[in-house]
Image (cartoon, rainbow, N blue to C red; front, side, top):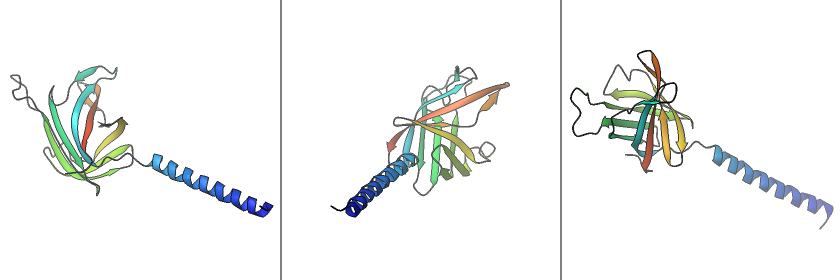
Length: 162
């Protein structure tokens, strides 16, 4: 092989390695796939010290969220206990709209909901993944002057949306 042919071959190999590396980097940089149907598996509200102060939707929270590949979503959440303790109001929430997801933030522009006051602005959720679970974190809330953080943990039950 001539020096020129060896040089050409080395450049071809280098170009191939660079292409594979670029494809691998692009694949790992792609946002996780949120499309599908997810069920609520856990929910918690914590105070600034990290102490759990409430369990949203009660000890038997039920929820489902469906996210389509064309940017549409719907969510329904409820306290799933068949009977609530006296004086307890059943938590319930539902909304739908168009969403965007950039890999770390899910933003839904709500167009129908169960509580117009609560869902009058885009719903912003920070998103992180732990294994097969998706954890949605809404902006902090406040109760009696104390900042509270809420997390809703979802498990994918279908890669196909409703």
